[in-house]
Length: 252
Image (cartoon, rainbow, N blue to C red):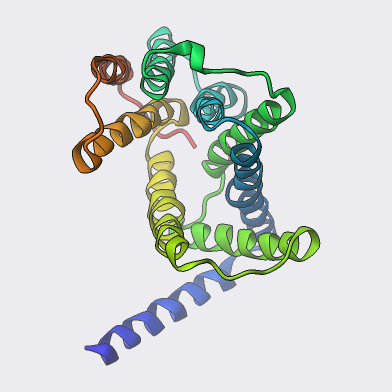
């Protein structure tokens, strides 16, 4: 069994290396640039925000990136912004804010202007990364590999320049691995595939389901109290999704 897995892994590695060799310099430049945007710069700015501002404040601003995707897709991809799609984005964002604040909007204090602007730049960066990824016609798995190789190199250089190397603690190791495999692994593959299959402005509003599902997971697995406002937030996101159900074609 071990030999079979090793052979399969070697086969995949050889196949991927052959794909790499077919890429032109322009393909590599585009993939590395997008990797720098979406898998390095976005997270550096975002984590800086979490380290220096209120978590709720950063979360709300962070989920503005689907809005940036819709806006950028109009200018870069020449997609049309319909009234239904605009309402879908508005309702989706409203649902997110309702869930994150538990209906108490007064919890949001946008008074750390420097950090808030950096988080908004992070959201804009990921929006730009997503929109431009539609214009790169490379195989998705290879794209993701290049993206995270770029992030690895850039992060290593940043660490040497601005910080020091330290091993994660035992308590932090599992969350780091889960975050790397799921949040920064499979999710990127699914996201790139979704962007390849449909218009960016069509896919973006469905991202607003993320914090709503997170709240449901907290209720199911950690026995968090079920608040009526969660249902209202979920309803807003679902209605937005229904408004956004119009047929979309891939125009990239």
